[in-house]
Image (cartoon, rainbow, N blue to C red):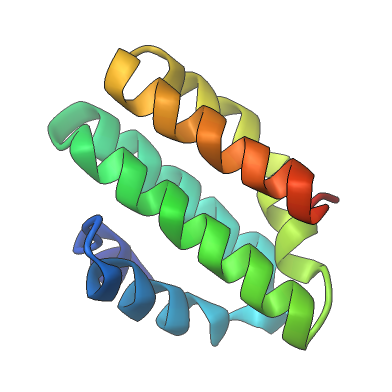
Length: 113
């Protein structure tokens, strides 16, 4: 089910908020959910590169919301899979800039493992 939700993500507010809210339900199994997010990034790289940005925004929302409300389980889980995902985004100018901006926000807000 999570796979389908992530594969439907888009960069609109609702296209990020919906998948983020759904993914947050998996807090107690954050590593498995983060692994599914990582797999969605690979699928998006192959068939829908613009979805890479949407999926990064989902990651951002999940990480920030769950850190504030429940703790760092998703932060730790994403830390384990984030580097390869960011490498995918770094291969395209249009996605690299958005990844850099998101990482800047994380640094500023101290969203890290």
